Length: 223
Image (tube, rainbow, N blue to C red):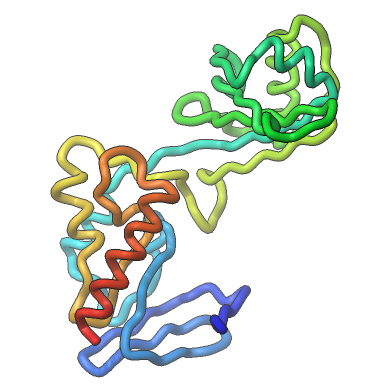
């Protein structure tokens, strides 16, 4: 069994030659080693005792990240929308690109999703306003008003526990910044997450998983 503690944000990670401690508002945990897996934008906001080396802090602050909002909408006019967008299409309106997500599901309803990223990400709008814009786009694509049955909006940019969608290194950051972010400290403190993976392109889920494999090897080498 894995002991998972919910609603206990970590405040301070202590590390020394003899072990580590992880402090929350309610408890303090001790161990031989710790793996820090919080999203990149949040690492520099964690407390570390002693503080992280200046080169790692600088690298964390320098790394660029992408911004995006995911939209998932269900409509009743499956045949009309399928005929209009096929498996997906680009548009110059919100959300920019839409893709069918119910292609392997039966029924007369359709689920489409979109990813409004970069400059196309909506800011200052409520979720319902964003969905209204998606409805307007889909109605324009189909050629007549359509009925939304369900809609969901997820902004990783505005989520306080992520602050970004994926890392987006620029220039030589992949070669010079990412290794500093991923480097373990004193055989006690290890760093994983998609923002630590050095693959070309966005880290995403694959980058996060690969970083877990990397850290597992690092921890085992210290055991």
